[in-house]
Each structure stands twice: as C-alpha cells, then as structure tokens.
Image 1 (cartoon, rainbow, N blue to C red):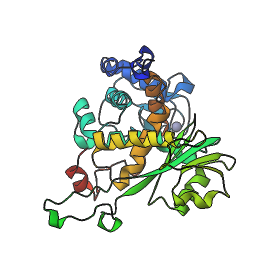
Image 2 (spheres, helix red, strand yellow):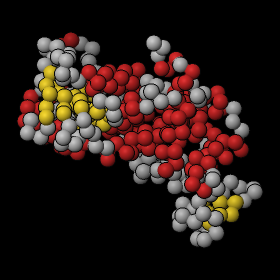
Image 3 (cartoon, rainbow, N blue to C red):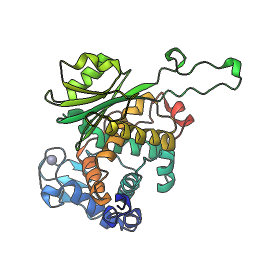
Image 4 (spheres, rainbow, N blue to C red):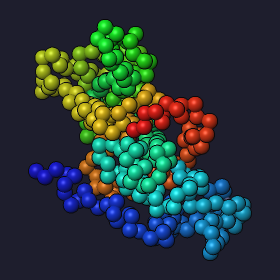
Length: 330
Ligand SMILES: [Zn+2]
C-alpha cells in the first residue's frame, strides 16, 4: 500500500502555490477565512457589528456602529503583525508540510525573517492548535503511557568528573514527564507532569478519560491503584508488547515521533515549552490521514479565531530567558 504522504490526495497544498499568491489574493483569502459567516466582509472585533467602512489607501476597517478601527488580523494570533499577510500564510504552509516538526531556525531561513520572529510565530501557531486539548474527554478503548523529555545534561569531558545522568539529583530540574492518553481511533491528549506517579496520572486521567472507558497501561506500579476508577488492562512489557487484549503500542508510537521531533528538529526541548511541542505532535498525529490543504485551512481558521496570549505578545520585550533561548536556537 502506498504511504499516505506520497499519495496525490495528500498534496492539495504546496508552499510554492502560496508563495505565488499576489498580495491582494492573499489578503482576500485571509478575509474569507476570518469572516466566513459574513461572506468574507469585515466584522467588528470590538462589538461584532457586521457593517464596516473600508479605505482604498490603507488596509484597515472602521466599524459603522462603534467607529473603532481594526485590521484583518486584529484580535487574532497575528495581531500587531509586521509582515505582509502572505508571509503568515506561507508560515502556516511551511509548518503544516513539516510532518516531523519544524525548527524556528528553518522557518526563519525559509521566510527570510529573524530567528526571534520565526520562534514567536511558530509558538503562536502551536498555541492556537493546542488550545482545545484542555477540554478533550476520551472514551472507549484508551491507551496511556509516560516518557521523560528535556533537561539534557551535557556529559563532562573527563571521565572522573562524570556523574550518573540518570539520577534525579544529577539532572538540571527541567526534565519532565509527558503523559499521553490516546483513544483508539480518536484523539491524542498529552499532559506534562513532573513524574509518572499515581497522583499525577490519576488527576490527568480523571480530567481526560470518561469513567466507562477501558484503559490500557503497562506494568508501571503508578497504575496499580487505579483499578477502582477504570476497567484497567495491563500489559507486561518484559513478557510481550501485545498479548492480544491489551497493548500500549499506539501511545508508544506517538512517543517515538515526539522523540524524533525533539532530536531531529528542536535539539533542546526545555520544560517550559515541552507542552507546546507535545501538543503540536498530538495535532499532527490526529491529522496524519487528512490532506495537507485541509490541515492548512484548519490551522489558519484556528489561528484567526484565537487571540494572542499574553505570553506571546511582545515576547522579546522584558523576557528574562532571552539569553538562554538565543544560546540554544532550534
Ligand atoms: Zn464595532
């Protein structure tokens, strides 16, 4: 069977196609995606009024009711934009087509913008596509598993200075556990926790898994106390990866893809952004059988529906971590 990504069906969008759009066409496309309920005509983001003046010389609108001015990106992830609208469409196209994740260095090079600009842009996209994960509740056959990411400690040069980097006391405090919950045939929900202990996994499971579900987990003792909450199916990995009834192969497959994104694209995934990369990986996983044109539409619509969070607006002003981020660009 042909791999889905090689099929013509998967190729409904190309970066070249977006790059060839004229500014006017890109602008109209943005308007149509932003205000589909008003046939692509401006809707005031301040009061919701559907009639607005537009100006011939400047690409801004003025509400006929509250008389406030706004642009096509006001109140969205791309508010206060400094680049032409087409560049944001390009950024999304490049992001969507990078099936194994995308580094900010790569995005910056492809768009011809500074590393800082690309870093924030990619994180705004991640934030938008990860926003609904908080509210997801899974049911039916569900797999759970945990794996540790981040907090890379560089080995010292001389052998006598080396410490056992597997021990918690020798790690740098940024190491976190990604606990993943996957509904078979459904969505993927990652939750970042400090460690895979009973309290943390119980809280995440109660939030994201319906009580009527069957939960598949490995032999980790953290799950032993959860039999009263769910119908638990356990697989002993030292004996087999699947005994015909229970397995966590879906959860583990997702981890191997997140691990590849960490190693291949992002190099250092710090504790602070681990949830963002995990959410991105979950989104890609859940959309893997959807053609890239549809994924592009979905990402763009999501970005236009969502306001920029406080975290990412004006990110480089007054950010104490600036030195650390620029020391390890990814
Ligand atoms: Zn208004």
